[in-house]
Image (tube, rainbow over all chains, first blue to last red; front, side, top):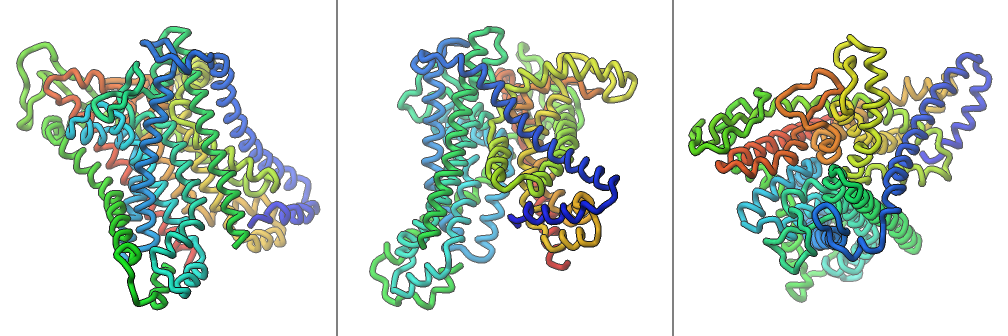
Length: 299
Length: 341
């Protein structure tokens, strides 16, 4: 599988004997294919350049310590709000998502397992705006919390949930059978095996998925508009009945304002967000990947 | 799995409630129940909340193009289907449903061939040392937030359509339906479709890449040995073999595109009460209108506008659910085909 390139170089040598026209046509199509890949990567670079070249000059130190006022000011409230919303959401998803994933991998069987897995996949396909409206109906209206920190966090938790459940499930499923049976043979109980054998082995995989999910939550807007609202003030200690600011809202609304200052803030917010997301993604993919490989190598 | 197989090896004595795992089993079981219940809760609460609107609007929500909150300043209310709304109110979602389907269809049209080409290049033409960085970059593309794509759309894509693509089309294709009018602000169906294409493209490319990786190498080499070019092998052997998986990947991406909110909202032109007759005209999608109409819906004292938005959310939920189930069915079919071959 991973030797495709090496083997192709062999097949390329064979193809040298083919008629010139065919070779040309073949190379033309391969050229188109590689050009499409290059174009894709350039597009990504162009999007990053577009945001960063405008956002980095706008990152003046005072925006980190000033709250927004109308369509100007700083971003302190939005940065803190985003971190609070995502932090609380991750806290909840660790409890619910990792819990559900452990149940799926360790205890569930038959139709119950198939059913929960199916519903988790279905949840992954629910559009984020629908999750947001659900949060609005249930949390904001029905429970009367109004726009709030907890409402927004629960909406983000629902967005992250399918990824975390599936990630935990897969990570625990991939623990080698021999390892666990060895522990059972030594007289360990189910719980002991789970906590001392399976868990340490699966942890890097679970943490990777949690970080990727947090990256998704950081960039979400639609689920928050209807649940977290927006506020020009720093988030208070109130869990409910107080709207919370977040970075994506700044990007969406401030770019439509006619003022240079609000555009700058939108680009600055986008830059901060991109940095946060790239850091979580890189951490997830390299650091924990490394951990996992090391662990598997040792065993 | 393993734990059940090892059941016979378990010691017979159980020391305490905690070490026997009962607490753990029920605690995690409750979390799984909660996860499973969320999908049902979403459906139930959307239906309950939008029920007055379902009765009030009847089939208008699907067929009428007019979205009008009615007379908000009068004192009276109008009763339809047993529920009260503002006089003259009309909550028709046809424009939004058409816009959702049209922008997603355009996105699939642009993204699918590109994703196939890129997936092929990623498997067969990227040298091994570059593979991890390329994969990471394509996955990073999927991780860029919707609003940031929207920001790029407002800053780059929309002006490009307004100043370059539009004038080019009106100069060279005028008179051709759907693409000939080419002018306007740049916000519209084309912008929405293109931004959706950029957003769903990485998901499709990554899925197809994984599928192509699994194509048996010996079959590939046999084809080369018989004198086919490598490209011909890809188009005649690899692509036909994975067509169902490609279709499933398209369906999953379509599910994403249909529900995508922020980027589309920022470039679609937020059309109300009119269908696009051209790819350069403003459109609106269900997801976008739920966000852009919230503020005005909240001013409706009868609350019917808000409930109609909930009904739109319900319609979107049903559409995306159907598309995702279709994807699952196709995926299962693809697995069965593979087993029999």
